[in-house]
Length: 159
Image (cartoon, rainbow, N blue to C red; front, side, top):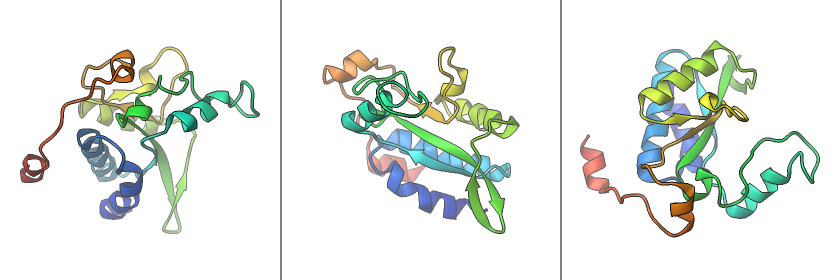
């Protein structure tokens, strides 16, 4: 699978992310694709309401628990996190493969090499699809209105 097709597919999900985080997600797609591991972005910015719906899953609504974070307690809510899925290519089509295998661990290692925090390293509720870049800000700081640094778009394009 060609990285440009994966990048194009990702843009809608990356649009609400902080520019630095979105760029790291693009780099992750490119590097994993180079190693023959196609990934797709499954989540980017998530509203507080969307987060609360996910939190209810497995608690007050049917399904498995997929997050320990209520609305406002996830870096997704501030555009600083994204989720991925490793894919198989079957007859030229991407097929998401949620079975955590060596490819998922390699994606995690590549993400960490880009400076991302990987949910696969968490002790409670390992979150293999999850990556975040927090700029050193806590969720409490973000909830209280502190913002990550603004990035000069022209500077980014010159790299």
